[in-house]
Structure formats: structure tokens, C-alpha cells
Image 1 (cartoon, rainbow, N blue to C red):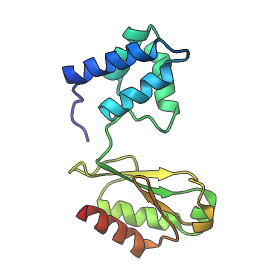
Image 2: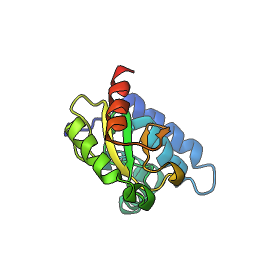
Image 3: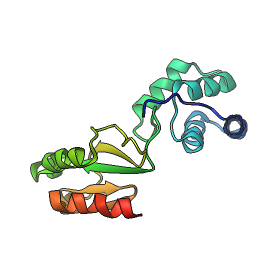
Image 4: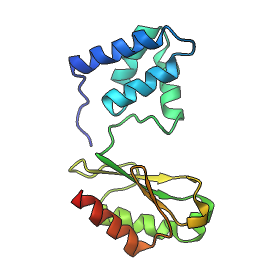
Length: 161
């Protein structure tokens, strides 16, 4: 979205409390990062720095974890996440054409968020519904046997929510 990420003092305090709670348990880093993702919606370097200072884990190690796991994001996502599966069964059944149509419909590329902050578009890999290929997701909902028309309808219906 291009705007500077700001950390509200209230959210900083909430994260520090979560860190303090998780440090009592073995292997606290992943739960701490999940809490940070939930609190801030992403884990940019400024949030990683807070975690690093409170845990004595290097920013390099934290960044490696954040960039490795798909559940973490360095940038804030939109209110809703649309995903088009590019796993082999979906791809063979035309998901690239669907993804191209969704990109055109939203006016954004994969990994980007619409200017209004409503949608983030992701190319996803196998979500385990290969029998319904090609599939598309809207937040936690999965839609099977999607074509370009159905994909545009999913977007249109989502805008009404």
C-alpha cells in the first residue's frame, strides 16, 4: 500500500505483554510472531525490532522466520484476501487464466492490495481441494470449479459484503 507503517503505543504494549507471556514457555518465538501478526496485521522490520529487543533473538533470525512462513507477512494485507491456486491440478485446468482475469478485474498484481485496502491478491499453492480444481479462496472460504465468470462474481459479491 506504500504508506509508512506506524506502531501505536497501545499495540506495542499489547505485543510486549504477549511476549512476556510466551517467554514463560519453551520455544516462544513462533507463538510471539503469531501474536505480532494478529496484533499488527503484518510483521515489518519495525515490529521485528521490538521482538528482537524483548527476546534477545537477532533481527536476522526473526526476519528469516517471517519471510519463510507463508502465514506471516511483511506488509499489511487488505481487509480480505483473494487467492487463486496455481498448484498443478488447478494450473492444468486453467487457473493462470483465472488469475490473469482477477488481476485485471482488481487492477493489481499478485502480492498487492487494492488502493482502497479492501483486497489483497495472492497466488496460492495447493490447499488440498484438487478434486475441485481450479480453486479460488476468499479469506477462509474456498470455491471450486472456478472459471473467469465465477471468479468475477466472487469479487462482485465480496464487494457487497
